Length: 355
Image 1: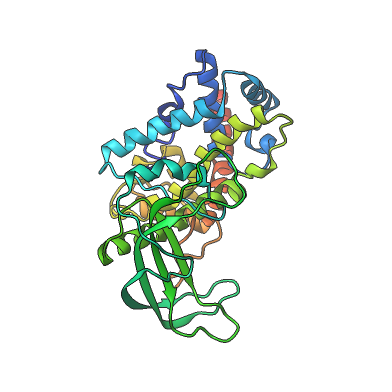
Image 2: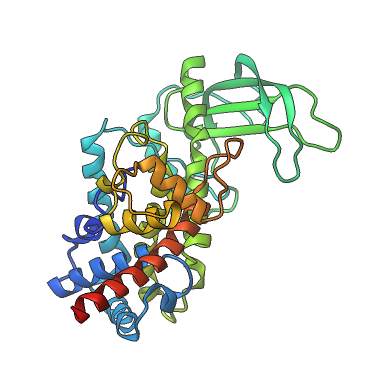
């Protein structure tokens, strides 16, 4: 995930400045709306856009036939691919199979090799290894130590659904599967843990299977991204009356949600304790936060200092025994900081007007 705070004031231009919308004024408005929403991600649209003129401009923008979900996503995709090219070039796509689209899997068939058989319970799959790990407590599940798991994997045939939906054939699809199942007896009243992971990545041995499991473990980023969209940006509270107008707003807020996650990720980088906060944030942000946290303006504030002060503003206690602040705490701090910055800039403008 790329950082959205390399320069606080120009991210919108970098990400959306080349969006093809048929008119430069529309592109400029997309940039402006994104920056406004990024500074005030929470609440309803009137909360995100502080003036009636800005809100009306968003409605006009979304009403344009040229401003589509696809056009805005295309700009985000181009930005992301550019960021990937600057890194190691690797991309991971994870699909939660709460609802699995069989149609979209048809195109994978030509990429797979040997066909095998497997079932939902893992029967017919070779056991590759066993391992133990601690289980963390979650809603409806108690924590426990050293639970034992078996990992199986190999090629399978994925049968088409009995009730046909979409455009697909009736032939089974060759895929690979990794099945991780708890073999130790769980506490009374709890179900054993198991994962069934379908993939087009070849799974021929334990190393292949572990690679797929490690990828799946990163799904929590996706879960947090959905929370950022729903809880942070209130994406489900948009009150558009037409789908065509709703979709561009959703695309913009999906980019805003990404910036909320990046608040946390930037604080966890290796150079966070040595890199100056002003390399990621405009000086005004650093000034306001350092004055609130330390009682004076500090130009030497590091990224680590900035994010822990931001977390403190969001309710984190910064105690040694506390867990590292998550995106929600940082988002709360960011929202408060932006309000403080608005007041700071308003006072600064008034002072300049008086002098």
